[in-house]
Image (cartoon, rainbow over all chains, first blue to last red):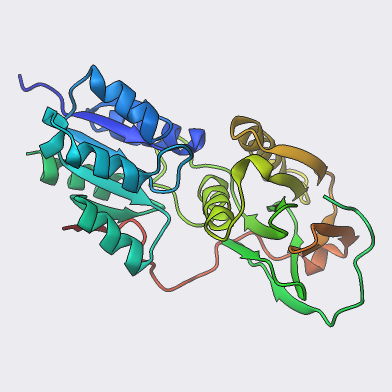
Length: 124
Length: 182
């Protein structure tokens, strides 16, 4: 049996974390959660994932900073897919995420089926 | 947040906040207005940035098995409102909140107003945003007027016929939920 896909979700909204946890767990993914970019980096120091899904607007370290740190680091996370999940729809921010090394961009509110399909596309 | 009567010193630009919307402004003339039945409106204010915003949500959060979150849910509109406040210069730690609406206007129907009110209170606690004032529940419709740059709010009960029907507005399909892989 295949190992489940491991996902780290990074979002400062507890409500959004709960929704993501429900939506992704229901699809059989293994989900860990962090509340901002720094908490994500801490967690990733000791853990492996197949995919990071991150919000943009967060305290301490935002989604852009998180992507830059992961892409600029020397860990296995450097090459992992990172999908942005945000309420932002500005072209400028999307371009910035892309330039920083994001793999994809999803605008909230998210549709659980489309999200799960995206997870499978970037991890398989 | 202040509770002084709304000043008439400047000609006011009245903007309606509809179901499923969140609007933010620092405009000194701007007045956000909405009429609520079972819906809840959140007013957020950052006194230092002199910036405020209001949302108006129809339902709290999707139940188990729901198809997903759309723009009528509080869980989405709260985040949109907070993010837009921050994008325009507010600091989350300085945000102060008022909550209005959440009436149960039709006896015998599901207590949507109560569920909306409870969700909104819970959300603010979880996000550590101070709730300064609430006028929630009961059976009356309310009109809320909010001067976002001043943090001034006026809430009064109105004829229930003025409250919008709690039904999702039909809108052009949004890009939300779409996945773009780079």
